[in-house]
Length: 135
Length: 293
Image 1 (tube, each protein chain N blue to C red):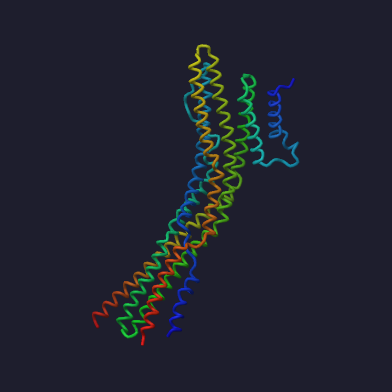
Image 2: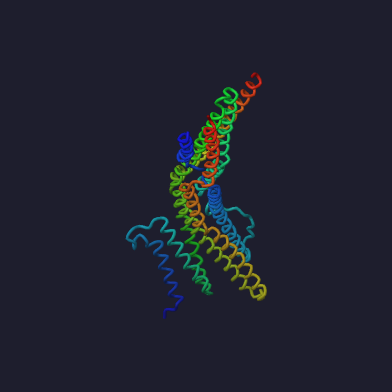
């Protein structure tokens, strides 16, 4: 007789299989790294729920071992995923650093211009005073 | 004479038409700065959380081993599952974004434009005084005319500055969008790792509880206390994980706040102030023209 627990256990086993070993055989296209991570995460989530619903020590030991195996796999995949797009990150970082330099340069230029205008005004003011005094 | 007065009255309109750029709204710049800080915090918290769960899990396993008669093994120091170097480029990007946000806040301060406009107006005032001393007969018209021109020059300089800042913001908008997309993908990956680490830790914690309960000398009250303590620890990790889960919201705020700056409407208050200043100068010049015999 198939109990709900057995059924859920089978579902979990199937999901694990789909997420891992049999994925490339069953799927029409190979999984991307991101999809594989998502599938492993989903399989781990099923295991977590199953673990919460049983008191059977043997079953729990199997679930917990499978959860650790999933973590190990997911970390290996995450390291690959996180090492992708390095070039794009470098380009974007350089762009934002340049934008910062451009903004600082624009502000400096505007302040220098204002200072020069103020200085010219002061010179004209001094000349006015001088001419008035002479006149 | 009336015709000349009318021509003079058109001047502010022409200047304002050519000078409709204003600096981005200060609130919008502050919102972008906050979104950058929040994104950095989420990224750093995620990696710190990973290290924390790993440490708790290892402690749990060592504790179980100790209870079963295994080695004491109190020393701490393992290789992190997700080392910080793994996200170094993301942190560098966020740091560059932070620097850009800070420079933006500095450059977008309306004080910069006001300083330029005030300096030009001051120069006009000084030139007016000098003109009055050099040629007292032309001073009644030359004075207001010089002031008007210098005001116009000041506004155009401020406008050029605002347009330059706005051009930098617009040029980086696509980069901010791309950065948010890449960071979203990375944080999605890290989140999956964290979820599984959390599940593994929860398993370890429940194994410890089963081990404790399996000892017949443990009474119900002690078992109850142990369960509550374990529950508290697991809940704390869940709360920290929920904070990392906000990453999508945080990155959307980053994109949206920058896009709002790149496509923002001109600051109405700043345009109105320019109009009022120019109108005052025009009124003075028109009055001077009318009084001229």
